[in-house]
Amino acid sequence: MDRRTFLGQSLLAAAGGAAAYAVPSGLSRLGAAVHRYGPGRFDDYKALVMVFLNGGNDGFNTVVPLEGAHYERYAAARATLALPASALLPLQPLPGGGASDGARYGLQSALSDDDALGTTGLQRLFGNGAAAVLGNVGTLIRPTDKDAYLGNRVPLPPQLFSHFDQAQYWQISRDDDSRRLGWGGHIADLMTPLDSGAAVPMLISINAAATWARAAELDQYVLHQTGPMPMNPTDAEVRQAMQELVAPDLQAHAMERSYAGSYRRARDVGQSVAEALASVAPPSTPFPATGLGGALRMVAHAIAARNALGHRRQIYSVSLGGFDTHDDQLLEHPLLLSTLSQAMTAFYDATVELGIDRGVTAFTGSDFGRTLSSNGDGSDHGWGSHHFVVGGAVRGGRYYGRMPDLSVDGPDDGGQGRIIPTTSVDQYAATLARWFGVEEGDLDAILPNLRNFPTRDLGFLG
Image 1 (tube, rainbow, N blue to C red):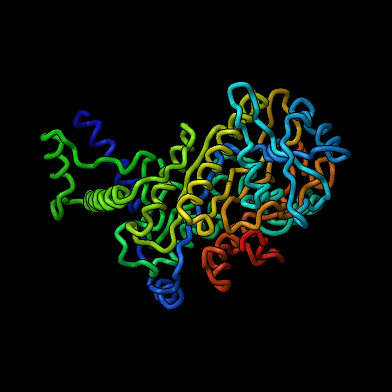
Image 2: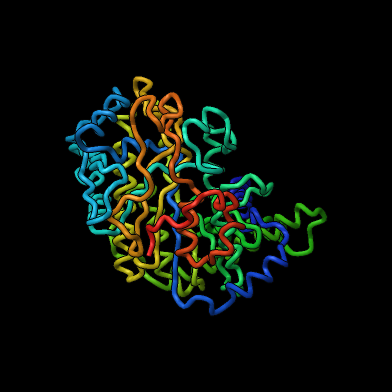
């Protein structure tokens, strides 16, 4: 590695790996949190793991009606994108866990000659009660039906159907914060006093910084799926240049001092993470040789090292791209779902191996759903979508929320096949946060839109 390359990578590591989004502490808020979430508040371990599907997953070709009038409406709306019933794996609910509309649903199988597993893993987890389906989730400010939406009678999230804006809003779920902090970051800030002496951040993102994990009081640490990025160059000239660049008290400009401090913190945290990971073997559960598989394998290894990392609560972020399926959807989408299913299934199995499955909840998010209408070869930017929650504490084998009517121009179609969400991200997030240990009185501060919805707990975690 030459000098220029190393310095460039070091800049990214320092900026994205530690303190990239740190801002001055809110002392009054922190003081209040010490009282509620100080040391000894929890005697168990819990982790939230967000799997963000970049591009907008087509939830209505992920979880699909199996038969009868529900399937006929689906097929008519989807046209060239409609999947045959033979391509669906039944998601048989446990007693009392059926979908709100009484329909039977299946999971796109993603089966092919070179992909024998497909999505059978998620089907297995659903059948075993370790996975649940959340119906028609999306960004909302308040409950919204077709008449209110078309009549402009309700406030709406900013720039609906824009990738950047909706991916941001999904992970922030508020427009009153100029710092653009994520709701995962707000949760972590609240719990800062829990492990105030820990050398490793509560917030760990794999491969890239996540909006969801931006926090005010805490740094977000970016961990590569193969481990911490090396920050001690072997080349003597480069090492000397780096030492001079980040040496304490030698920087004349405030930005130089900030960078140097960030770099030193990233270097020190990376060393602590490396030592923690080296102290325990990763789970022996096999993971698929995919980017998402590698990312979740690293999360599983970090969870195995949870005692050495020093936290009772941890928040992890991983992502999978490619879901902006305007073209070739019938070819590309099954492979994406297979990648998702196999990685999330391996991750769950690893938590079982570690004996921590009831303390780890993984869940999906995405920019938005896709249009019911076909553009001929794919689907365009929609709104509502179905999501999965996986873990030992999940009340699985059940459907939560209201499944939408998939009729063309039906009561849930806001136009152009864009299905209006019937469950808000805030309700989804609040259910996860409550399980994680956030007290009821703190939920509205994290998720200010939550007060607009009558149901604050969707019930999928116990």
